[in-house]
Amino acid sequence: MRFTFHEGLLYVPVLVFGPRGRAALRFVLDTGTARTMIAEGAARLLGFTPEGAIRKTRVASVLGAETGFLVRARRLHSLGWDRDAFEIACHRFAPEAQVDGLLGVDFFADLKLTVNFAAGTIELVPGRPAAESDP
Image (cartoon, rainbow, N blue to C red; front, side, top):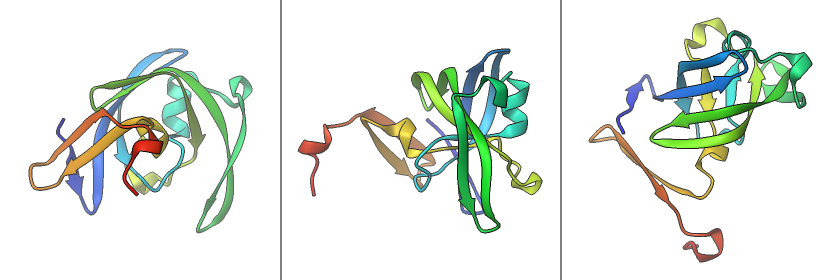
């Protein structure tokens, strides 16, 4: 799969299935983020609301702790892989971020992620169980 690399960020297309349908969105692949996140505005357009959330969430930022809400998308598709009943944290993003979300490490569970910057490609394949991984 191809990716876009711009100003130090790796952008990937993500298809999110919500209560009001689906939307093709632009996420940043972020291996420093434990949980995949979607911008609150994009989440609301898909029909995700605090009232229908699993629970409230908090995320620390340089400006302090911010509250959001956790939802369950029917499906999240990216890089050729589907995650059904996938939990996503909804939070406010800075308007200048120009991104719809962050694709966190939870999406990559049980997968081997290879990023080839020279070729501009990402490969995801089934990975070995953690007990078998190299130290």
